[in-house]
Length: 414
Image (cartoon, rainbow, N blue to C red; front, side):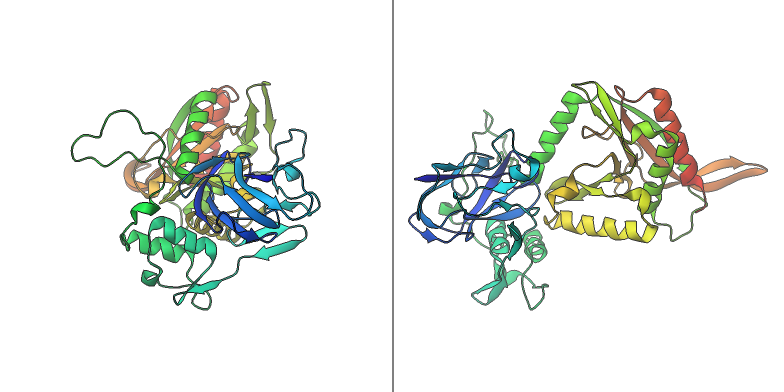
């Protein structure tokens, strides 16, 4: 008997939720055959079988949350095999080994290619998710699993993929229009114990946090426990901007200009060892609001890219975040953070820093304000800017000089 333990499906993800088993107990499976669809904080991922043999036990059912490293399935493996297959549990293993999908004794290691739905790397080969047709609807198994999870009838989806394939975005759009099928009581996911007490009359039932929202809650708790936040707020006069000025790109440029004045805010802080790391390049973590919760995507090498390249990166990461297809390497190792919450509402904020970063900048809603000028008064466009910094690593003077440099750059005409 050989046990397959749930591998790390991303970068240090603590668990994943079972969306749909693609095999049953007693089935005979081939090596790398899609075995189960799992939802992480970042994507819906198909986990391939690490063995060729017969499935004897499935640990968990749809809706169950399985911790990384916990048993996922038992096999009777063809030929000799080790007693168990672990994935990244050896503390002495390298980072690449920690991402390896565990296998039998001889098969080559298989590294997660980034949990992009549709691709799982196996050695030097890329195993691409195949599109299958069921009842006239063409979609990949992962998209079919998402439709089942959201209780969306594929017949109500408008295919936008190449060749009439239904995409994840199509399924989510159908889900937003309302429920399309009646839930079968036997398909109801198992639920963790809920808080004591029944909801008041007229309230909905308690719902466990899943996927992105669960990851967001953990990140906020970590920040609250590890960061000493302090905030500064001021206004940038952007009246000299052109009508077509790209606000996000200007903010990104301003962050790099300000970091040249005060590099200590483009940095990481290690509170355990009381040390900081100042970065030469700037990778900005941009907060993306999605229906599933808040995600932070990393814009790489902001200091080396043109405005057009930055806009392309912003659009790509936003779409990948919303479609839950963003690779995990695009969601880590940012050196400073940016939130543009003002496109919705609000002037100032005290945004939350995700350690090990030491600073986050937030732009509020642009407004018109009367300002004094030589010879009278004028009405200018004003952008509120909030800077929250970790006071363990950044002094008040450093933060104020950073904010001043940022405001000066934003106030420039181009």
